[in-house]
Image (tube, protein in one colour):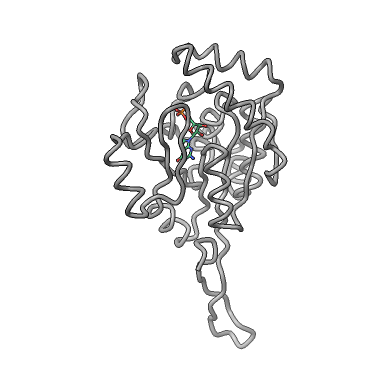
Length: 232
Ligand code: 5GP
């Protein structure tokens, strides 16, 4: 059974509980490197903690400030091979010389529990998820302009020139793929995009945030990923 069609209960006309699919829909956020996906996801994690955000596995080395198990599970090539061979990854892709993948098991258990789930992955990964889970909702995060994307990528200053070149080449291809996505959100403001994203995934926390504004400041919560993870 697809992971998006898990069983739940609803009352029948006679009052007895009958099984019915609980549509805890899987959402995939993709878009070019540097567009601000991780900043949007960090904001989403802060404002809407009931949306579960998958932590990927990667062979990339941690950047300063990144923690194993928080931004990524950092593994070596042998471990990544093992995960692929054992089918532990829902999808995986190469990106700018490293490999990245989505662990299958934690995602499945969250979806089975009816929790709305979000993956933040590259285009190749998004295509694989769509093939495996046709009900998954694919959302494309676009930059306000190409120049702005280049500025964001170069402004980060964490990558050597060759890596940056590769990322820009990939970004060019990724921008051309926006048509494959159900929804495109333009990242003009992190808060606006986050609100639109939440409205698509789980409206209930928008209502909670609204109530919170009237009843005092929201509780502070650690970001799932720091705002500087992959953004300017
Ligand atoms: P970074 O190295 O900047 O953290 O991430 C590079 C790219 O890998 C980003 O576009 C990010 O969305 C993508 N990525 C992160 N995790 C995954 C994953 O699990 N699968 C795939 N296919 N891409 C991922």
